[in-house]
Length: 339
Ligand code: PMP
Image (cartoon, rainbow, N blue to C red; front, side, top):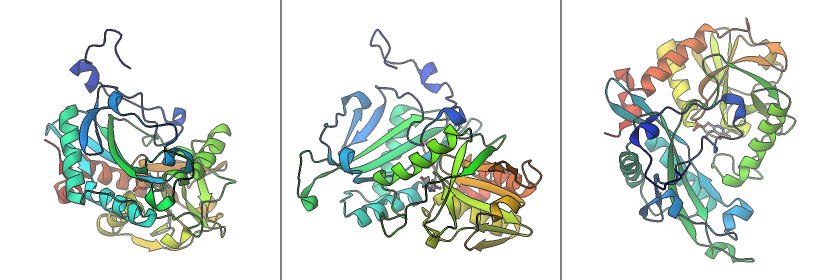
């Protein structure tokens, strides 16, 4: 995307909305072409993207020894404001991931949020955005002693549109790949190397013509989407798999649970879900930072409920998006304004 003449990109071009076609995206980490001149944060400094270089022998590239986060920023035109959704919760999870991987993250949660705000301001974003902090073993060489491989920390940001088609809903299939069990790779840490599991499942689903994969846990119960947590409605209850189903403990999952409980007034249950319940439930949705709150209209060729977006899901979407965009003052504490 670097302009031929090497001039800085115009503000107009930076602010143009980027919409990502749902089925053309391979993973959550490939949102759009990046701007080489955008500001990033790397190892204690603000730099341009094009000035960060990572070596071929980087430990994390070979062994997946890193952890990361995905955070969304929602632009509100009327308020002329960019809101970071749940920035604190995401950075708390990054700290937990670092602790599990025994990586040193040399910034407090507050410092990380402040650095992100500064980065968004430097990039002067006035559109929806995505933020990708990453902490990884950056030592280079073969046979490095594990404990002494040094770590690097960076934050990348970009303008960002839709990851999946939340408006029309998506079609899913149950993957042949099982969700990694916590006994092999820690599931509540957002580990870079673990995403080979999501990648295999999602690629398989998309090659078969579906939008997204749903993974079973190693015991055969429903775990989650390739990069989303899962909720179904059966009668008066919304149900989501418990943490013991090897899910990533999603930030959006917690918000959806809060909305079901407080705003919808329906029962919210965490219990194991059988595969065949996906075929007979009344409503199904996937949620995550990328996927937001997304209705699932079909699983393995069976329509979910009426095959249309259900009322519970539609209500959750309305509540979620108005909260995220700073329109519903009841949820102001979900957000960190940038400007
Ligand atoms: N599961 C996986 C495997 C994910 O990658 C994500 C996205 N981070 C989620 C669930 C949803 O988590 P969150 O709501 O925190 O984005």
